[in-house]
Length: 570
Image (cartoon, rainbow, N blue to C red; front, top):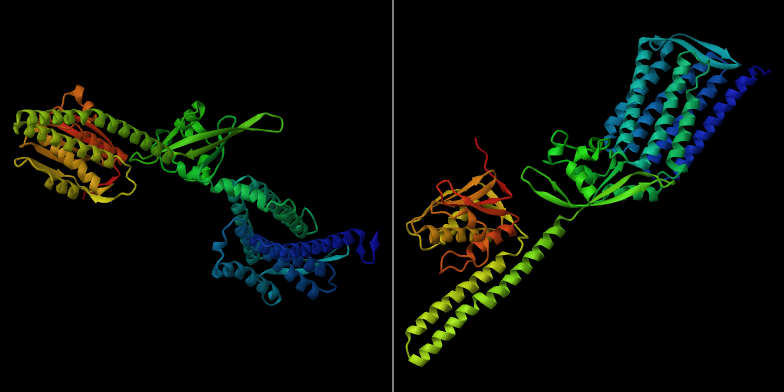
């Protein structure tokens, strides 16, 4: 049944397109009231969609070929405009607004503008359409024409443009977190309706171009994703942002142990490691973590989680480590079924360091008490005894012996104060030329006029220069006292660390651990604090020191864990 020249089917199509125009204008008005940057490009997307519908209505109702052609040109320009604005919308939505320089936007717009001008002037040159004519369908006027090479190029350009938009959406979907995934998935599915409608028409499956209807439906889907369900509301966004910006690494694993999600801190944590478990798969982005099993990423972490232990993560080839406390929370669904695990790795490196420092301070306090109650009391008793004898016998020789005991007390007190001072943690370090510190320490050591020093300590270390010099002075004095005044001492580098060795008699293997004990000395005149101070200074820097046999059988002190930089070898 027909109403005038337009059939009922044609009238339904006409009303549908008109409703599409109205919906697009309404959505544009709704977007105007939103302050999100993406809302502005969404508004322009709807305005262009509305123009598509208005131009299509004008073409349907055109009584003559020139009017229909003019409406058709407007329609084609609006269709191309939707492709351009859709890409701009996707760029803004995916957080890449910095791409949109005036020059780039101009290049995006330039090609469609040139195409529209060529179509508008087609009657004069025929480059875009050949054999243009009108066709009546259910009382509606449509334009037909044979495509040319240039028009096919335009179709290819539009296809590439929209494909780039879908690729950006897909990339964003894979790289973002839960709430954005729902939103992006809806926008992606809505956007697929547009090429489907275009292909149905170009493939002669439908006599009416369904692209305008697909555009309107896509706009509605995007509106639902952006605004209706408050996917851009501050609460879910804040929750997502909180997890994403947390300093603690956060991992979500499934029931099989596969990683389902990870925040930026987790990406950074596993981005640089010498853990043998990740030798062949250093993770530099969330995509490198998601989908892999936790044991594959880090077996030591998986073991720590299962055992409830601290996770020690080695961050680089030098061996710097982080102490991490894994917090494990099971994730259950509404039926109480366990679906996965939330794993939060809290960095407690500083806490562990301070706790160790407190324990060392307590140890030094105990040692101080022991020295005061024992080591200082003994020479004090000797002084009192010799002073009493001097008074009774009126013999000053006893005072000389008392003076010797007082000298030992002074040495003990000096070493004890040094031990307490050097044992404090090193809070500020600087890049220190190691060779210069070694030379300065050697100049301050007396008693070894025939002793020699070979200084091969190249490069710099990060250390407290004064404490480092004290360390070398104690080692040099120890070598002269135990190996003799003609001892040969060598300081060198090895794998970024350093060592000090001499050509003396060395230390028996059974006693090498004891030499660092407070009060231990193989000489009656020694206080037993020299090497203890060396170890304390090393520990204050976070280094380790051990005594081994040197190349010539002497004592060799090796310092490891040193934050250093060796010179480049040409």
